Length: 320
Image (cartoon, rainbow, N blue to C red; front, side):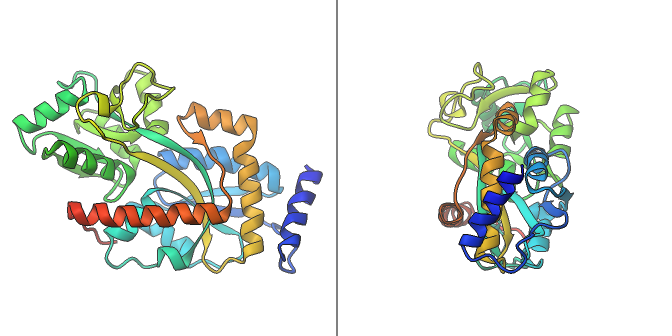
């Protein structure tokens, strides 16, 4: 452990670390801008536990849900850039910039990409007993009764919402979207049969699928998920070309100095690459993926451009 910390410190100092070479000397707050129990929260607790061991200080997960992730993201965007408050977000951070006309922060200016954690497919799920048994069935039902089929999501602009919007647009069907303050309560209402469907991330849906509380109708990636080998891609079961993959990553306030970003990235990449952490992520349906800050910044920029175009085409708007 001491050798690992020394190496991390040496790398940061080589990059021109600030005077506080003992960073971190107190707990680091890892803000999750969604409700506890959702996908981002699950990933934060897996990675945060490993980071705590590595940095020698507690990495405390702080759930600040609401407004589709905007509230928690704003907290970090306006926090001191000292490396003690960071954000774990999903690809929804890119779509937020397109969805919200008056965000209380500038995604590019006020947030500094630290590194990626991994990617996952989504899965179309329904409560056992629901009439549809495949994506093709869902499309048939929605076409026969426009607006009657209900689809839960973790909030306007969340991964589950955009996945469903993309599904509806490509299938040319009208469904009723039911937003919640987080993926966990949304999934809970599908399990309780209060809502018909949800296109949820694998980490959040897998426990319910394995317990047979939810039926998996199709995965959102173009290939089958290792965790659900018997579930066909939506693209093969009613909607050719459908593809929606979610990524997860860490951000710091935009004022954070480059040496601190470099040190955080080193620890993050080492945590994601650790065999036990990687195994836990894979068990949750997340494929570990490491990136340096520059590569992650470029990936986020590409996502910002992608969602700006898609949100404008679908005519979706939201306010924080």
